[in-house]
Length: 442
Image (cartoon, rainbow, N blue to C red; front, top):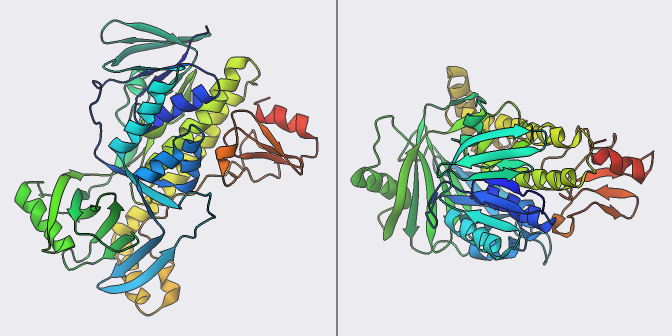
């Protein structure tokens, strides 16, 4: 058997990559530094419809959706006034909800269970990578216990403090925002019949600040709130903040932490046979739910390209196109989330004046409401400018992409669809054969 693909990191991105590789018939070895069954994060992830379609390609989409909580409406408030309501339409009985919030431990458990059931995925916990080197035939790593493993490629999905990125000596340029945010999971009494995302600007508990409430399963609400620089997440201080938000009714703080958000990106998401994915490649503010969604799309993009590269059918541009496509997506996500943070936590008097003007006008002026930025929710990134996309094609991801892959698909009208559900060509002037060759990196 040929060497497997080495996947470093058994979080949602790494497990998704391994499962998508297995769907394409490619074996992988997943190396996770943490001991088995250790919960790596208590966070909740907001997964968008098209990402659930990606996860359904490995049989997990509906299972994950059923384990989470779907929502179709977002409400925005300013000083007690409801200034904006955004409704997300249902897309048919067989389509996923527009957004599903699912606790990250639940997501990881469901993906791990599928990985364990796959004969092509080998899960190795308590295997911290300590060295990595490459040659013309693949990637070799050694782990802290002295184990040496060989792979044809490596997907580095080992988080924002990526060991693989450090071993390769790659920088992680960007910046951290100075503001600190309390992130708490609170179990409260049953809320509205239909869960909603609520965002409050200038609430009584934080004049000039904001509070985000996101529904989670089992009557839990995720609270994101800016806190002072000297705030420590001690029991009573957290309890007081939570009471300001959810009131004095029965509630229970399940977990709480204080975080600073960052905007960073590795200069190139491809280094030889190593492809960086998820937080190992880019981190950004969570407002807009772009971290996990973009990371799973990274895994989707990487998996089919690695699978094709292993067959010998790929041209020299295929692996580099991973950076051209997902790097462009990361830049767009960083731009959008950067704009959001400048609205939420203004850094200059001009930004502060703009925020105040927009919010005050929004109470009476519907036109001002379009300028409110509480986080632009993620959408599939189109690869219009990719070297793989035939000129004149938008490179968009088709709805219901679960039906595509692991190979290319041709739809009526000479539409060439890549394994990741993105259109590579539509009625190409030079024909489908040339379009397929271009989409394979030639």
